[in-house]
Image (tube, rainbow, N blue to C red; front, side):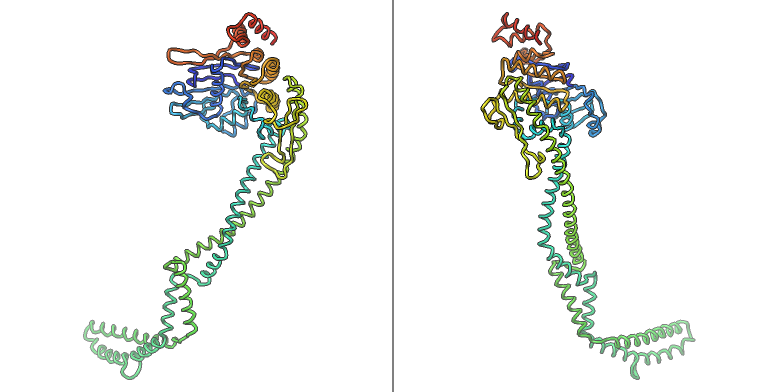
Length: 552
């Protein structure tokens, strides 16, 4: 329940601190006095966007504070979700500085606007004049049906799942498009990868192949040179080893005459042994040289293929080719992963769709079961509001496929008079008729949603006389079970209030300010008498005002 509203430096209000005792509170005042300003301020503290233009004094900040009694509202889950300490006494505060920047607080803890909006939905329902247009909106119509059907929570779960389903379907569409593009390239990339795989790309392999090719192409020259070199070392009568043997004898003879001569002999002997081994290695190497034209062709083919791949992929080395191969392999793996993702998402969609269909069916059954009761309740209230011939019907049209509204499309049909066919509200209802219908629906909805507070901004628009009196009776009846605040221009409704707040303007030397005060009994008589008169209240108007208040 709204207990108190404090406003500072907002629009025409310098400072206002008003209490709301409960039951039915009426707010009256001349046109332009600022009755709707407090609603605008309340809207800000409940999460609406701020505008620096609303600051009365641009050098000071605007402060709006709303105090609520939340006992018994079951807000434990909300506080847990928002990581806040639960408290039955709630103070919401909004501060807007001269630059238009705002800060929001819940019991002195900084919070975002979205938190205020979520909480406000559980605390209060504000019916402004333009909200009559909601009657034609599917969401509002469904809210009424689901409130009576007891399917609000189930429908909330359904909408969440349906939203997830829509996201999954969108993701699947994107993945399938990506798969289509990938399939066009798949064969090409598979060919490129196989080509690189068959070539057996290795770092340094090309250089090795080129050396092998050069060796095979020059096999005869290599063989001849090896033979000649081996013969020069160890072939014929005058080879290198024979000459070295003769030198060895000479040095050995003098080695005993000095250590250095001995060293010369040893060094020569080492050369002799090494050269002798070299001759053997040369002979062995020569024996291994075989000219193999088939192998040469194979090697040259590998070299050509590698060079073609280097040119094809516009790279300079085998390392670069390996990088290209890895990149292509990653694309191929991604395609396989894409197929797996598509399979997984299809399974998720199937599971979620089945759940949505099941919930939609349950919701639809509950809705259909509640329709006749809602229709009868609305007709009863409309009859109380001097519309005895009004007819109201709810059409639930089955949909071929589930949608955001479930498996039903809803339409509210209305007729105010006998002999007039039922039709959609915007085609047959006048402003006064819509106001009365909205009051009927809002009063029913408020009781089902168990909101602690409902505020009406001129719900009496377009009506007068006896109808206004009956609207006041209904508002008073609602006020017995919950807090009701209504802004009105009609004395019949103003007289029904358990509390009466009066909004008025005063001028000082520089500005005009709006004020609000609670009227006592005598002040109420005078104010209602003014509402009954065209000028200063007459004696008959004062008498009438007393009668209205005494009846209520």
